Amino acid sequence: MAGLELKREFVAGDLRDPRRAAIPIAAAVAGVLVPAALYLLITGGAEADAARGWAVPIATDIAFALAVLGIIGRHLPTALRTFLLTLAVVDDLLAIVIIALFYTEHLAPFPLLGALAPLAAFTLLVRRGVRAWWLLLPLAAITWTLIHASGVHATVVGVLLAFAVPVVDGTRPGSGLAEHFEHRFRPLSAGVAVPVFAFLSAGVPLGGLDGLARALTDPVAVAIVAGLVLGKPLGVMAATWLMARFTHADLDENLAWVDVLGLSILAGIGFTVSLLIGELAFGIGSERDSLTKIAVLAGSLAAALLAAVILRLRNNAYAAWSRPSPPSWRTSGRSRARECP
Image 1: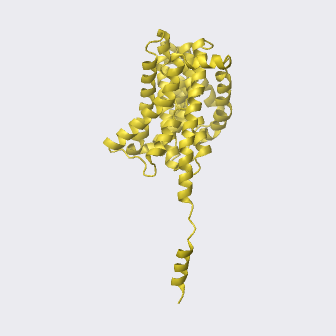
Image 2: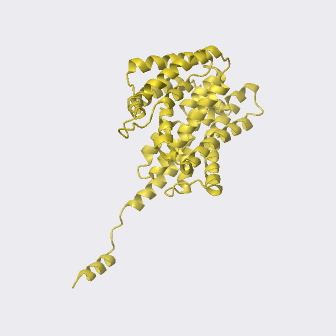
Image 3: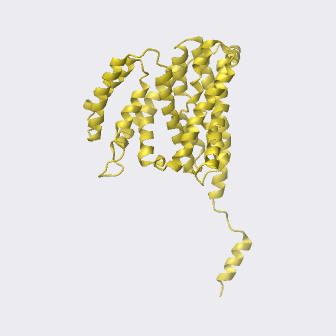
């Protein structure tokens, strides 16, 4: 889904215009670099294995961030959702690349090369408009299996397959295969895959209030919370301001800086991908993995609450501005006076 959304934005969305796309892309990159640097700074004096989790606070969870924005922001500018979607999709793509590069321990070249054949066949079929699941699904499954066997984390397969799918049908605009796949897969992704992953990944024994307090004072947990709550908004805001101030890139004229601040804090909701990176970094079921889950939950909740306060205030302000104010008796009297002969 992340790959399909990013492909659509590049071909038919706001990312077509480099000046409009430059700011959210730069914000996504800085939103990855700054939390990672802050994590390494905080965990510098901890055990050596603590550094393995540097990528945990880099990812923005698209589903949860957009859900929070949708609940509290009915009157916010649509440009804010577009900015968040672009930032989160690029952010997820960067996270997938980082997983493939830095969390792959053993690389087997022959399965990796073997995956090119089913990937090429899948690409050829979708380019010709084939929608038959009994042809495409086995090819996708074989590609996933071979990439997984090579040692590269198989999340990258989803992006590769998505990038192969054409976005716009030349004869009927808006009816491309990518749109068809998004329509088919979005309920499966949002309604099954994400909740099941969250349910299976997020459960941790807290050990009561004392256990929770001990967990949140661990350097790894502190670094993750700081990366999500402080590093994310700092990176996003800094990159946005620098790009808007010193380049020809355009920030949407409907957005105020306080809107961008709320959005940058909202980008600190890092749930599914952060939990996945924590498992890859420290091992499923390990003590560090449990600390990572507690920290990701705490940091994401804090980011959601802080962003909700700011964006709710902005939503109320936009709602008040868009509501027509009733005329005073003086104004209505003068209007009626001018209408009299």
